[in-house]
Length: 386
Ligand SMILES: Cc1ncc(COP(=O)(O)O)c(C=O)c1O
Image 1 (cartoon, rainbow, N blue to C red):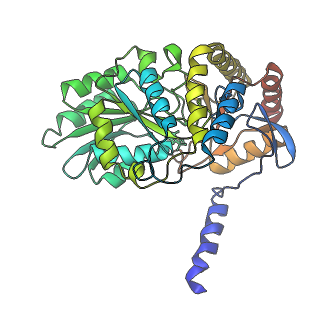
Image 2 (cartoon, protein in one colour; image 1 turned 180 degrees about the vertical axis):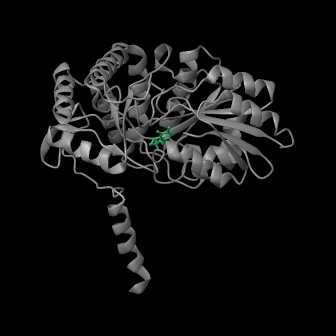
Image 3 (cartoon, rainbow, N blue to C red; image 1 turned 90 degrees about the vertical axis):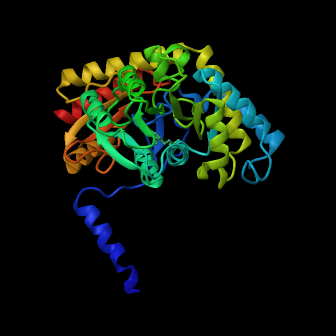
């Protein structure tokens, strides 16, 4: 049994460092208020930004698809046949993203860890923003390419690295569109100019911009008015879209190569028909109900303004993600616990999800929060300070 003793030591080490994580039980749908461990609390930690996972049209599509096609895909898309629901969703995605084609993966994590090793390998260079998501970091590791990390959104640093790396076969710049823990937006026009000048590829992870930013909610490129032609876009269906899955959107040739080379596409089972149908209809709702985005940003603005007035330190986010920086993991955990007692669930985010010394509460609002729920959250934050 000694073989496994290290697990107890590991758990104790996590506890002492304030880094032990706990799963809490939810007994309700992910709306503005949830039932958490038996209590109703305002949720400020959801990525269901537009509330689409409980939208009546989205639910109806999922139920209908389950009746028509069953609950599971039965195998990988190449081996067991490709559900027509995939074709419909991928066409819808390509139209939304302004690309020739799109390919759906079983999660955003799978999309990043699959596409990066296809785009770059031995003899290639990946230039990655210091605050990129863990799935990008893991994709870089799997790729076996050389990796250089540029300082967060620092275009001078990126330019320097590009100028000094002409010997590599291919170069790939990869960045979050909206940074998941900070809520700021990558300077995509500058990144694209640098890429064009140095003959590099660009991969943008639009997990938190898709559905929320730009015309029709089509994402971070649209926010800047950028054409999609020379940019590879990754995104997820698990956040504003309210379902599950990841995607890559780009030119036909890219999608063909991914179908043949991306291991996280080939060696895994397809998504359930209900998930595909839900995501497909959710994309239509995002286009047809712009008031959801307006409501989301109005809630974000209100909460941000009041928290700053109360004296909290917020990072300069431009989006629905509001990071309240608290420093040590213990402080973040203590404030999160006090908020929970006051009726608000705002989970503490600690290393390795964020750099050491920047443990925080990562607050997110959703369009379906009521004014009363936002007010309740504000009162809880005020009470915790006093
Ligand atoms: C920036 C970013 N990329 C990728 C992912 C992974 O997406 P998914 O949750 O669909 O696996 C996430 C979310 O966890 C994310 O925040």
